[in-house]
Amino acid sequence: AQSVAQPEDQVNVAEGNPLTVKCTYSVSGNPYLFWYVQYPNRGLQFLLKYITGDNLVKGSYGFEAEFNKSQTSFHLKKPSALVSDSALYFCAVRERGYNKLIFGAGTRLAVHP
Amino acid sequence: DVKVTQSSRYLVKRTGEKVFLECVQDMDHENMFWYRQDPGLGLRLIYFSYDVKMKEKGDIPEGYSVSREKKERFSLILESASTNQTSMYLCASRPPRQDSYEQYFGPGTRLTVT
Image (cartoon, rainbow over all chains, first blue to last red; front, side):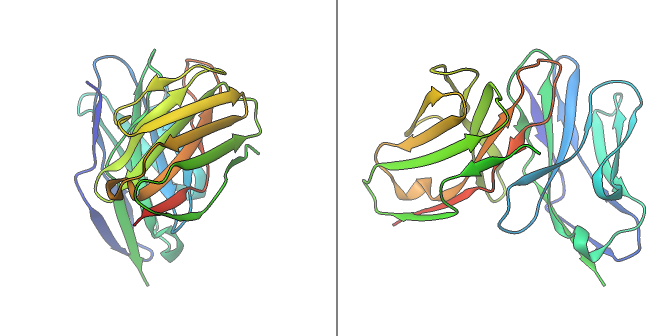
């Protein structure tokens, strides 16, 4: 069965420092991987996706993520955090040929001035 | 830009009421989805539809039904609302291609059942 784990409920980082939000996944076939962000009282906004090709994918707002097949991970990164990055981040996986998107529980990112 | 709208941002209903949550998308997407979002549980799929009048159960369909009479509109129905259905409900849509594209989400409806 497909599953996604986000091992940290919350990540705290100082403004200007690099940030990492972790995600690991489990699928039996080839994965499609996504990161979404949710700001307070808003729907989910798409950040980036991995379909195939380069393991490092770049997305919106300066975020990037690295696909690591051997570790079944897809960690979200940003070189320099902003206070405005504070939000709830969701990792999601879909197995090729299936219609369902499976979400992790979410990680709350808090960037302190 | 893709636009997915939901009929209400906030809704308060009483136990036992029939509740309708409406979702409309303007991109002619075949696939539409209903999720509920609860703290610590992420998003869980309730139902999805891949065409008009077609529907499939997601992971937590109990207590819910759906209707898709027109391509742009996907309705979630709580036949008899219960307090454990208090949650944030999110609608999403996606193009039909199987080579994976992201889902587009509406702003959500926060439902409180008292």
